[in-house]
Image (cartoon, rainbow, N blue to C red; front, side):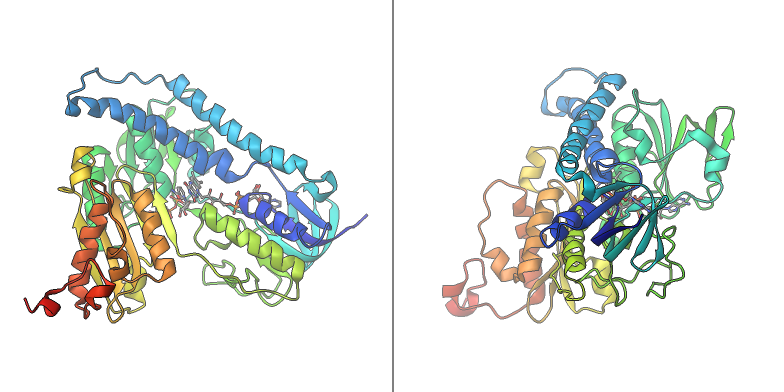
Length: 473
Ligand SMILES: Cc1cc2nc3c(=O)[nH]c(=O)nc-3n(C[C@H](O)[C@H](O)[C@H](O)COP(=O)(O)OP(=O)(O)OC[C@H]3O[C@@H](n4cnc5c(N)ncnc54)[C@H](O)[C@@H]3O)c2cc1C
Ligand SMILES: NC(=O)c1ccc[n+]([C@@H]2O[C@H](COP(=O)([O-])OP(=O)(O)OC[C@H]3O[C@@H](n4cnc5c(N)ncnc54)[C@H](O)[C@@H]3O)[C@@H](O)[C@H]2O)c1
């Protein structure tokens, strides 16, 4: 028997759940299809458990740093089972909240099973046919594993999902991939006493695209974390029950070599849908529509900013438009914001340096180093730098990149300013308390203001501006 609905949503992660809520505002005939687990990647194996592990690592690091403040305790003793018990218990609590939400939704609107397209609008869910007026694809992404590694390393090859089910910490882990996941997890495990080496194909560590800040990041992380950069053509092998990579043995190899959208096994190959040169869906960012028909794609499945808040936003747009189809609405998107919870933290707000350069934008840069920044020194967190970019003729803030203290908070202020269209002058005229890390941002903005060399507004309209022309100085 075929099930009929207005909107079928494939995947019950963050994007799928947001799509479900948005579609249900229009119609009760919504079906949420999930092949593996309710609970979302973010809560089960992503954002939340990784931040729990990082919180434990930060606690260990605070003990190590204490003598620098004159507080003498002794080296931290890491109780691996206790660390992992808290990670799993808190993770389960977060997942529990998600499951409660899903279970509160009518049972008839949920279906367990792997969905594949038979034709546009007709799905097969493990033998069950589903006919929908519109479909939201919210199938997320999975770790990309280089060919043959799985066969060669068997259970010694792990991905992020496996880490958060550990009952104890391993003795050693080779982490492959110095992107966001690799950096966050390698640093956390290292600080928790696990012997770690982070292997990267090139020299880049983390997502910073500004060449000066990227090399600063490489230097800062190399001071603490064992790195093997420019490790091209890695061919790990099993040696007994150990992984042999780069001439070194490890208990496990954690593959963090990027993620690929779960779009390849949906039976969509025969449909004439626009794709990029990697085969990923070319989706309208403001409608989430794929092509001109009743197909919408949200979250990591698009491979466009694979982040939690983006999954929630695109899910909402997709669910709303799928229910309205064919009357599709264009919706605004937020200013980009990406944060890495390393130490020092990394943030990219608005346009990155690479995006501005590739677009040929006329922009100036303001810089600050945190090495001598007052509050950062007080906290012994004076490592890093911040670059702010503004449009040359208008002084409008376009973007920023930083590695340093409180990047998760400064990143928000900067992304909000980019989205509002603030000029550097408007930002300088905003309040700055003392002594705070934000004063570092003010230093960078003042430098940027000088570089921009725009006429100052009348003295009545600005506080932090050059008044020399008015005073004749
Ligand atoms: C280790 C890690 C840490 C992260 N940390 C952060 C962070 O700190 N901040 C941040 O913003 N982002 C973070 N992210 C990214 C964030 O988790 C993702 O962007 C977000 O979870 C994507 O949500 P989604 O709904 O697109 O996918 P998911 O939550 O993965 O949902 C997709 C669902 O679709 C199901 N599915 C797949 N194929 C089918 C099918 N054919 N039929 C039916 N169901 C199917 C899957 O089983 C899954 O449940 C992290 C990711 C990882 C891996
Ligand atoms: N704090 C956060 O917001 C957060 C945390 C974790 C993940 N995420 C999201 O998850 C996404 C995926 O993270 P990720 O770290 O898997 O991907 P990534 O794209 O950030 O990094 C993957 C890295 O692996 C390297 N790599 C690829 N193949 C390799 C190989 N064969 N050998 C060695 N290195 C190789 C790449 O050069 C790259 O540096 C991120 O882009 C981010 O959007 C976000």
